[in-house]
Image 1 (cartoon, helix red, strand yellow):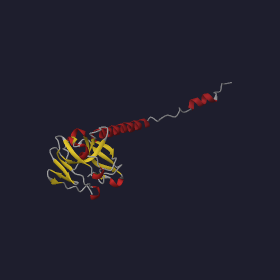
Image 2 (cartoon, one colour):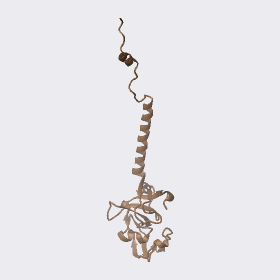
Image 3 (cartoon, one colour):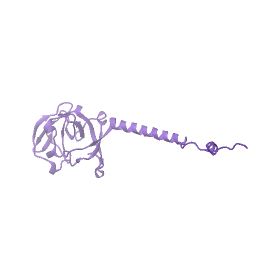
Image 4 (cartoon, one colour):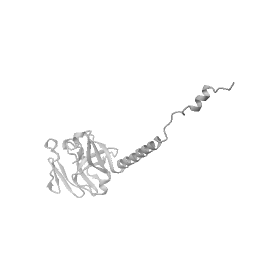
Length: 194
């Protein structure tokens, strides 16, 4: 009597190998991983060297910037152009460099700054400040000072709520690390920071 093949042997000859990733899917996966790694590298480069997302904390820059508003800070722009009066800058707080402040540049190096009952004078001329609504102005005075070399006189737009150069003096350029350029949250404030 001829030997009959056992069902297990017969089955093992025609059985499919265990399920595996099809070979044609591997190139797609590797392309996807490569693209992900490139995207992460570009994002890291942009955040480290060019733009940094920042959350505004406090009301000293209202109405230009609200508390908890999210903005992008350009960290590279001042390598290409000088800081100008009116720029909104982010800097390390001179009295505690672990904190960052955001204020508007009012005076440049060499400028004579004085404040009389809330009105700011730069080099003897009243500064037009349409970014400071009457409700946010104050009546503080500040005796005339000359902004030192490599320094900037900064003020918050909400003058009654701002800790600024009237309190801690002009800010050295070494503390300034970026310019506020674009708001992205909340959506109704999305756009260029002015």
